[in-house]
Image (cartoon, rainbow, N blue to C red; front, top):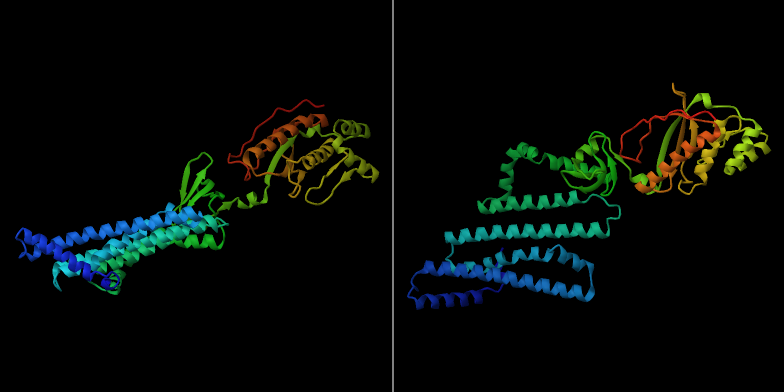
Length: 438
């Protein structure tokens, strides 16, 4: 590349050489050509960095003025990421290459070495500039247009890696005065070693493509990877690692290919739905399940008026049980205290604003166990906030525990809790002593 066509350096170079010759003549050193060459090279280096500093200062000054006048987020991001400053690094080596040939004779070994060093500097500065541009493009898109929160940092890292691989190959070819094609052909012998060195990066890149195509993972998603201890929020995705902040604020690092090669549970769907599931089993003591007569039903209706409509509708239809279908059906019977209690809990959940009316509601009996008959409550809260969810779940369990006795029922034991997306705690079984029969 002929940099003299870019920078009008001939007249300036002659002027600098004239000044240096006068300086050397003043000390009687005008005959020492090598001294003149090295002084000229030093002056050119100083001038190159001075020009680079001036260009960077002017660019940043102009950009700040433009941002101050228009308050453009694009310019603000350029300043924040120092993109223009990184790109300006290419100016000093270009200025040096434009001026340095005038001090040396053609074919000078010193000139060849200096030009090679300068070209390597150009390549490194070009790599820094391209990396800065790629990082800026990633940041701008991620902030303004990445509405799906796609994990694009891995793509950015890959692009930057490709840039530096190319820069390295070309720089080595310049240093040894070899064709890049020849160098690449020689690197073929080391392909196996390179595959081992970049194994994680290659696997991470492939995994990143799979995750993006299948929309498996976003930054901010709550994930659980059963084969690891990862159970928390994704905070970063790169070519070689996915960082997950667990519930105890510890950071777990998982290779991306682990997520696509094993089971991954993502709770984004729960968050998007606006509802969290509750599944609780209460084992009812069989000896407390009794038939009901009309007087007992009326007494319970008087104490819990919310089931009056349910009871009246059954009596008006001449029925003793209700088996409605649908998402939020209230089912139960008038024949037993447990059947009426099922209807009461269904109605209680249905009437409460804390529970979703758009998700499945079930209050059902499971297969009998040695200790009794499990009464399972299956419903969804109307919020996904963890603290609110736990408060609603606790209030429901407390309500069940305190109202069972009024229906003549008692809990033999709390069955094994079904852990869903709701809590990060392990499954637990707690026992409650049987209540006195009413």
